Length: 184
Image (cartoon, rainbow, N blue to C red; front, side, top):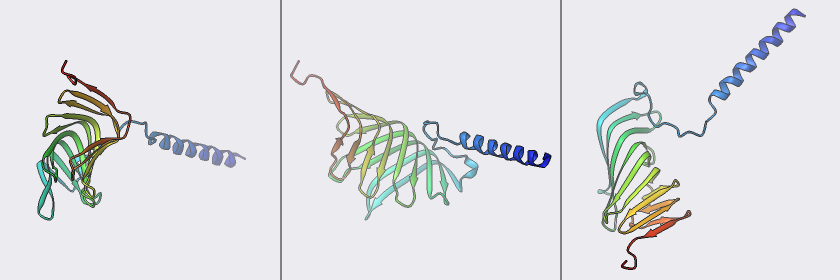
């Protein structure tokens, strides 16, 4: 009987350890951090510079203060980023953000944190999260986006900038304020 009690007590303790370990790793809803430990990277770089091109034409240019390259993870993690995206119809979009990553297999770029986009016509867009999809040449954000400049303020979600045409669209709820629209 004593052995049975020890076995049952051991199973209860084992079950408690498993449950506590599982609870510890359940996501809390907070954003995941993009920054890995430097010691895990295959290669680290300071003042990182990369150009994305297709058929010899420059599509984008990216600089980061620090980069961590992971061969097994097939990605490069970035910190303190500035980038330029070239629009096929002419024009340039510049942006900066806190951190992000480049996925090696697709050449997609994901950015997070204090993202500011500057357009050639003087508008400024701010958001917390965006993705560049290399295959379609689109910059997308499902988060809130605020646009200011040229006598307007626009707030919305589900933004997409098509880098082929240079057109910006928002599918989510959009609020617009126009200043001096009627000469007043």
